[in-house]
Image 1 (tube, helix red, strand yellow):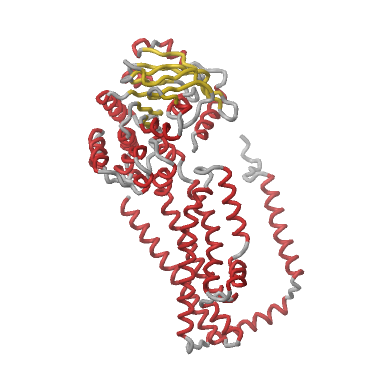
Image 2: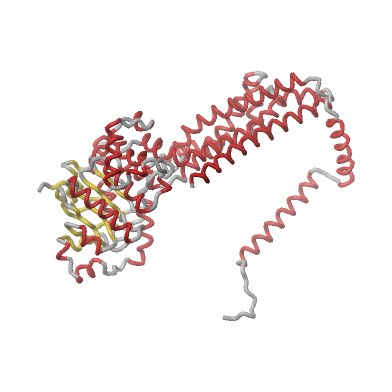
Length: 269
Length: 267
């Protein structure tokens, strides 16, 4: 074996792929700058203005704290309701959408529906429901539900598809019915994944519910929208702080719960 | 002795055209402990899975206790399956559940959907599960999670699950292929003793000829989807073993065939 010759460790076609990929990203970046007619000097002055604006927001006004906290509670309630409803519906639908335990027709049908719903952002779904049902938190719940449902159907069905074929085969061989196989052979190994996906979606829903007020779906987003429209940036600063604490707090809470579960697992081992 | 199972001219052609079984026929009497031997890809797993219709044969007929499995209705098939216990090479236990929960899964075929879904086993089933675990020496591990057990222990739980079905026939698909020789002996002893004591017929596919000769009351040799030996273990000569394990022209397809078999057992 020659040791002095150059030893290639990346295939030639992979090198070409990397070059083409990064060149395409650079071209898209430059094209986007031209399309938006951005210029560096304008960008810099806007940047300074943003700092000035931030300064105003940091000088927070807590006078409307009751309304803001009520709005925060409303947003969390919207997220809780939307997550529970969508998770329960997605749980049942995902068995029909998972290719290893369902028939082709149902798999394609439910996966297609879920992909279609996911293609439309939460904000647009909420706007549609606000237009149809009027202002308030209910359209927000529905808007979040739709997107969460589609997201969870995809996540849950993928978790179900990862179940070992042997589990299903073993229960089938005992004479168990399809429902029994799902309950005793598929749910136990996927339980943790399903809970994790739901928790992740809840975190997302809390963050999303905060901005739904911007399109008329109530909650803390409504407070933010009101403060910004009336140029009360000091009040808006307080609302942003509450939104941050709300989202961060929930993320920390779930992180702590996850750590506790991991610790219990380690102890068991 | 009466015939429990009758397999007549069974052929299995997979969707990709692979002929895994090419006309297999045999009868199994009550209380027989038959061991199937043969090379990988010879059709052993396919044959076992055709018997309880985890996969359907392409041609031929399988009659279990007087019922043609290929013509069985959904309900009849459920009844057939619950009377046929099955043991798998990779144990196929639900890892996150306890040993006793896994054993009680053997009762699902006898339960209503509601009771099965919510784990509502009656006292008799629970007591019976404990008794079975005692028989295989696993009574101290009942509340351990399945993923905390060793390979040999897992397989004994697999045997217990099959036993909980109160089966007339036991199918075991390479039950000791993933085990060390000591654990293999323990598992085969458990399986053989239980079948002998309870008068359960068994069809066990094995790779180890020495184990086959030690435990079998009858040996069936399969090569390339055909039975090439069917007889008493005492008559299994060196030349008969060579005949069973002789390379077939399709050997280069061997690995491919195995993968196909695995794919074909999906729901």
